[in-house]
Length: 83
Image 1 (tube, one colour):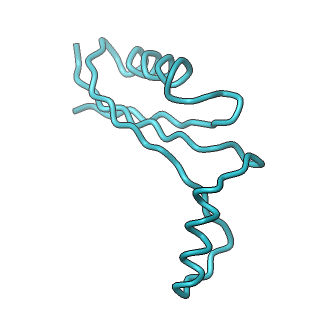
Image 2: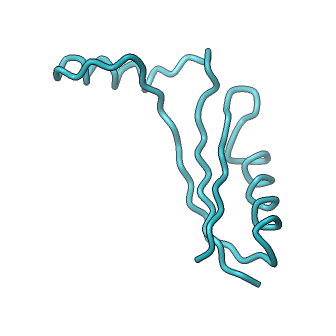
C-alpha cells in the first residue's frame, strides 16, 4: 500500500447563489479591492493508503459523491499526490 494525500475542492456550480462570496466581495470592494468575481470554496485534505493512485482517486471520488459534495449544487475537483 502507498500513502497518498488527496485534496478535494468543492465549489458551488455557476448560477447557484453564493451569499458568502457576495458579502466578502462587497467587503473587499469597500477596502479598495475591485474584483470582477469571487467564489467561495471548501477544501478537504484526506490522508489515505491505497494500492495505486487510481484506487486512491476512486475512493476519494466516492467520498465526494456520497458526503463532501451535493451534486445538485456543487462541482468538485480531486487531486492525488503521494506522501
